[in-house]
Amino acid sequence: MNTHTLLLFSATVLPLVCTPGPDMLFIASQAVSGGTPAGLRATTGVLSGYCVHSLLVALGLAAVVAASPILFEAIRWAGITYLIYLACKLIRAALRPGDLVVPHGQAGNQLYKGFLTSLLNPKGMMVYIAILPQFMDRQGGNATLQAIVLSAAFLFWCAVVYYALCFALGRVGRGRLSDTRRRLIDGSAGGMVLVAAGFMALVRQ
Image (cartoon, one colour):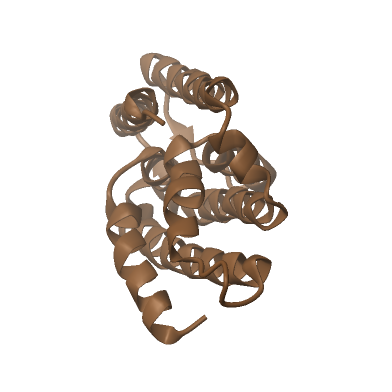
């Protein structure tokens, strides 16, 4: 794969990565509610989910999802339901009074949530199903290797944008939170995740 193709692919997907969607809003909610470490763990989980998408493309399974509207819709609504569940938890927490010390021992929890959020995110799936194959030269070499290289480029830009977002928002949620601030942050985070679910609901194959 030549450098021109990689640059063109990067120019195509970078605006999509920078556009607020389910992944970015979920990461932002974690960074705001739990500080930079929580945001970084959520980002790592999101990138792990995209690694699974990359593997599916390499194995040719993404084409199966693309060819099955019912399967695509099932995955899409599973993602919507999961984000609504997370949003409800945050909003319920915002309605409960009391100061809070932000816990720092939930790495596995945030990794897992980030993983599921990206794995079930139609926006991410559409990059792999609809955009990535257009940059592959089916007569110009190993298709699997090309898919891996393009996936790595997409993951690189996701990492740059999402990790930068974590550091930008992380300080807001660090340390002991007063009742008012804690409820405001939880409510805002819940709202962002709920908006993310809305983005998912508007996606069409």
